[in-house]
Length: 149
Image (cartoon, rainbow, N blue to C red):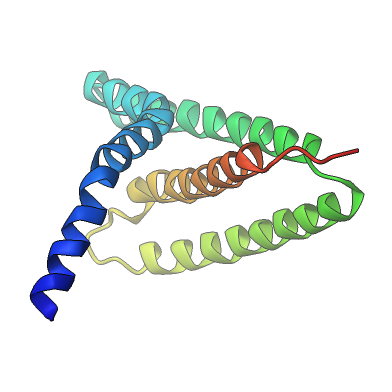
């Protein structure tokens, strides 16, 4: 019986594989501009100040994109849903503040002295994660059937 389930499973998965690859590539490409730009900028940087400037520019771009995504999400929600979204935003901001404090604590405790150097990248990663969350929420909202009115 398990052999027949395996065959059925393969037949079900086979048509979905190309779709999964396309969606994965699309998701990766959506986040790629900031990540690739940061990588290229850091590769060209010659000193810690230049690296910090690269990370600052990347963070600014992420923050702007997060704001843009949030605005687009808000435009698709009714008043009750917007209230839920604002609660989500406040919860993420509280998480961000707590996580940043924890990063300061843990990176500050490093014995190799690299904590301050690693902090901007760690903070950018938090923003990248939020951007990904918002992109997924927006994608889901765009995929929702139009409300009949």
